[in-house]
Length: 147
Image (cartoon, rainbow, N blue to C red):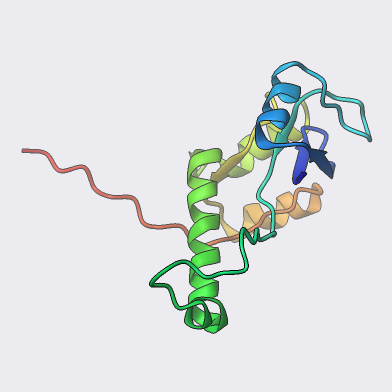
């Protein structure tokens, strides 16, 4: 049995229990998943704060004490995983973050995961409009070198 955190385009988040990852994909692709709040069918997996323990024995050559108890290493690994997820799953709208967020909220654009930058003034406006932002540090964009 596997438990996934799921999200709907209406903004609700909930758990789904599946026999396997493959079972989740089959149900998602078949349109069998629905939101318990709005009955919407646009349901997707979201980042989940869970860990999976596969066996009681540590992997050969690993030192589980150092890997799991150093808070700085754990925090760095969690942040790296979050950054990778956001970079892969969220569209970069750059400085258009506030505009895109408002257009999505008011139905002018299709709901989707977006990331970008905003000014303090724009952040105040978004908060007033009921749009919450989550700030995480992302790696700097690499400059494209021209020969």
